[in-house]
Image (cartoon, rainbow, N blue to C red; front, side, top):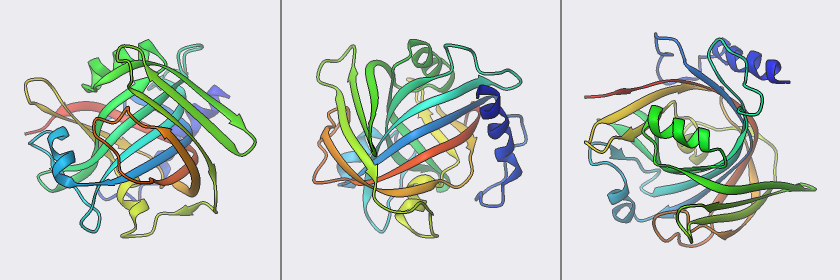
Amino acid sequence: MSLDAATRQARTLDRVDHRPWPVPAGGWSVGETREDVLFAHWRVPADELRPYVPAALDLETHRGDAWLGIAAFRVTGLRLRGLPPLPGGSSFLGVSVRAYVSAGGEKPGVHPLSLDASSRLAVAAARRVYGLAAFHARMSALRRGEWIEYECARVAESGRVFSGRCRPSGAALPAGPGSFEAFFSERYCSYTAHADGTILRAELHHEPWALEPAEAEIGLASIAPLALPGEPTCHVARRQDVLLWPAEPIG
């Protein structure tokens, strides 16, 4: 199974015509597969989200609205290029809180406000290699019929939790141009910031997401740094193979 994942990850480069800019010239460094992904998004006031985004990045909106997203997922097949996934070290659960940004109006990407993971090794690597605000968390993902139930509690910060469950409520469709689904999913880089203000950009590649509208029940979302109003817009994705390039400073 792990070798199948490695082959699928590498083959994502067979399809690049959907990308808004070319695949980076240098070689990718990390491959991973994300499974049973829950995307939950809340419409939030831009002036409330702006303080959590580095000043050097532009906060992007969709039809005038800013959005904060939470993604819960299982990572499998994590590996370095040229190597198979490590037994016992290639799978973990994660919850990412993100905003949608660009740098100088170019290369729309994701700015992870935080990443919680069940693997201490993944947390250490995310901090060191990609400059992420990463935290170790107690996590579970249980499947009950069509439902997937996620629980996440940050170890070092009591009260920072995420609890929710979801199930598909419609057919998987590609994100249409200009749609909200395209706005949040068709992004091919991630931006983070060092303490000294240096902005890092990590290029990434994947095929277009096959997103399904979802019925979801979000119990707690205090893992986000600001209050989340109302009911979220939710989607699920069965699987996505992703390639990541090294993070590099930008001007």
